[in-house]
Length: 273
Image (cartoon, rainbow, N blue to C red):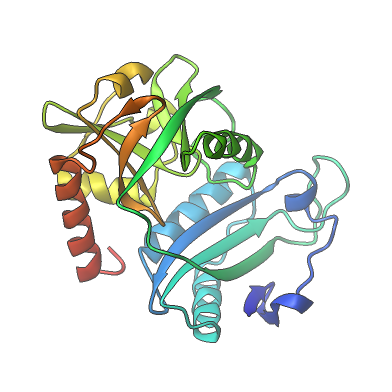
């Protein structure tokens, strides 16, 4: 396996990042996960645009997106896979211990792992912790993911693949690595970005391609929604058949199934929408 590290391809077993890298010591980094199909990335331009937005929001040096794109192509050429998870990680680089950044420049890592097509439906739980819609990192895709690790572990303990958060005012927000949609009386709704959720790439495409409405939703909408589905880079569109103890036995319901078809067709037509 070959990865890209700071300017070139390296064997995975030989690649080294300093133990004083700011991404390791304080979580000072950003990332993108990109689906790849037969060695080609999906929606890469959108992912790189969001990478740059996250860098600006975190105060990191602006990444050279042409160089990142070149690194992605090199890794994909070196590691042929039918379906892959391409991970772009960009951190504050070698720094002193503490929150101050160093002056050695950012660290860029691009790596690829094998992915599998997700099942059509899954189970989710809600968790008691909240997203802070006013936090300094809100809307940024940062490597500070420990909260998600804890919540996802809780979900897996309950036989689910995802945990859903409310925000600080009790509105439905997002999952640990997904956006959430609900169907009410045949209409598709998803929380607005102002709720504190990440502006997911798949979320944006689903909204554009289906006309879903961005709506402030209370968390208990999950108790009465006709259908629930998730979107993310590796899930694409995935129906939900259980929320906590509530079963949705018809999942994926007719609206979700239509969204799944639309997404698959549009994504197949254009790998960089």
